[in-house]
Image: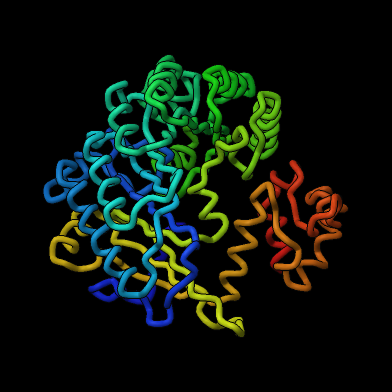
Amino acid sequence: MPALPSGIPVPDDGALPAWAGPSPADRPFGVYVHVPFCTVRCGYCDFNTYTASELGGGANQARYATTALLEVDLAAKVLSDAGRAPAAVSTVFFGGGTPTMLPAEDLARVLGGIKEAWGLAAAAEVTTEANPDSVTPESLRVLADAGFTRVSFGMQSAVPHVLATLERTHDPLRIPDVVRWARDAGLDVSLDLIYGTPGESLDDWRTSVETALATGVDHVSAYALVVEPGTKMAAQVRRGEVKLPDEDDQAAKYELVDDLLTEAGLRWYEVSNWARPGHECRHNIGYWRGDDWWGVGPGAHSYVSAPTPVVEPVETPAGVRWWNVKHPRAYATRLEAGQSPGAGRELLTRTEAHLERVMLGVRLREGLDLGVLSDAGRTAVAGLVARELLDGRAAVGAGGGPARAVLTRRGRLLADSVVRDLTA
C-alpha cells in the first residue's frame, strides 16, 4: 500500500484509538519487517530503498537490527495496552530492499525479538526476500536454524540483456545454485519474475519461465513491469530511450506463464502467484484477506481491524492503518528518543473496508462469496459472466458451494475492470 500524503497524526507513544479494543484471539496476525538497503537502485524501482551513498551518516546498516527491535518492543506495548496482543504470530516476512544485505545473524536476531514479544504459531511461515548474489550456503543455514522457513529470490529474468535493462546485478547462471543451497538448508523457495521489460521478446520470457521451472521450485510470482513516475526508467521512456511493450504483449506473456506453470503442476492462487498445493505464501494471503499486521521499518505500513459490533453502521470505524516515516535516519532518531516512528494514520470506515475486501479478495483463486457484495455488485455478476470475466459455474454455486465471484483467465487480465463493476 503506497504511503499516503497526509493523515491523522500518530501519538508519540503510538497508542491505538480507544475503539480498537480486543479482537478474537484466533485472528491471524502477521509481522512485516522492511529492510531498506540495496547495493544499487534498479532503474524501475520506486520502493523505499537506499544505497550506502544515499544514506550518509546516522542510518548505517550495522545498527539496523537494533533499531528494528526497538520498534518490536514498541509494538508489543501498544498492542498489549489496547488488548490486541496476538496469541502468536502467524507469519513473518522480511522484505526490502534486500534483507540479506544484513548479516544473517542480524535477521535472526530480529526474528528472535519477534518470537520473544509474541511467540510464533505452530508451523508459522517465516520468509525473507533475497537477491541471488546476496546469499551463501552458510548464510542460508543460519537463517534456517533461526526459524526461517522460506526464501523468495528476485530472479526477474534468465536473459542477460533483460537483466541489464532492469539493472539487476546477479549472474542468471547462479539461480540453480541458490535454489539448491536454500533447499539443502531446509528452506522452501520462491522465484520472482518480471515480464514486459523493454526489449524482452516472447521467446526471452519463455526462457525465463522454463529456467525457473527447471530448478524445481514450488512457488513462482510473475509481475508485469510497471514503470512508476520519478524512476530512472520513467525518464528513459519519456526521452524515448526505451519503449514499453503494448497491452497485447503483456497479455501474451501472462498467458504463456500461466500455461507453463500450470502444466508443471503449479496452480494460480492469486492473479500474479502460482504454487504447488501447500506452498502458497500465507503472509501475502493475509494481506489479501484483510488480516491484521504490524509493519516494522522505515516506510512500513500496519493495519489493525476494529472488533465487529453487533450493529454495523457503515460509517463506524472498521480499522486503523498507519505508516512510518520513510527515511532510515528519521526512523532511527524517533525510536532512539522513545517515540513512535509513525508518520500518519487513517481510520477506515466499514464502507471503505468493504471496498478493499472486494478489490483484494477477488484476486484470489477462491474468489468472493457473492453475499459480501452490494445489490449493485451482485447485479453486475451476470454481465461479467457473459463477458467471460467471471466463472459462470462458480457464480451459481455449482457443486453445492456458495455462489462466488471467481475470475476466469480473461478476468485475471482485466481484474481492475471486474473490481470496478463489482463495487460500482
